[in-house]
Length: 181
Image (cartoon, rainbow, N blue to C red; front, side, top):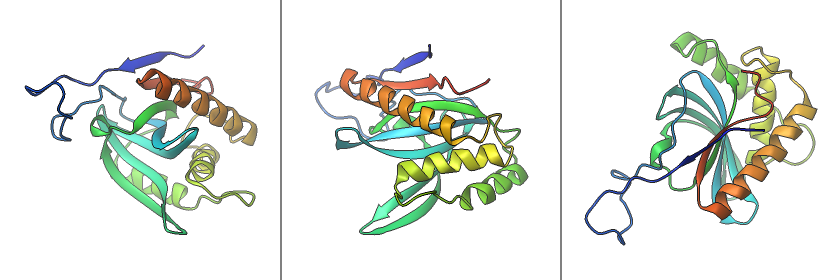
């Protein structure tokens, strides 16, 4: 069984019907520094999500590695993100922990993730993010066996939780069943 941590947006402002601005919105999601997460965001289409890998630097966010589609070209993107400001984020799935988040460690992690190759013919943000987690395990950064069988279990688990989050209108931080911490 996995732990669900529902998050609720903060209520701020004087008009409850007015949508919050990004400066005042807080989705309630919190993470732990040095932990590795699969992040799943809504695309507005059923069962089609945007996937990325987060290395948390503090409880509000950290470095997200992901692929973005620009027309017909996939682009590798690394950016710092405050996940508490995201209105599209559905699930933050904890997968493991890295030894440290110093500049030297993060440079090594970035190098490992940047070398990610997606097996097979299907290249999407999802297949790339799963392959990136495989690489992090294969490079010894997270305490997880580098196994495509485990990656498939993570994919299925993440899809199920994302669908639940979407239909229940909740944002969730969840420990993966594949996480050994």
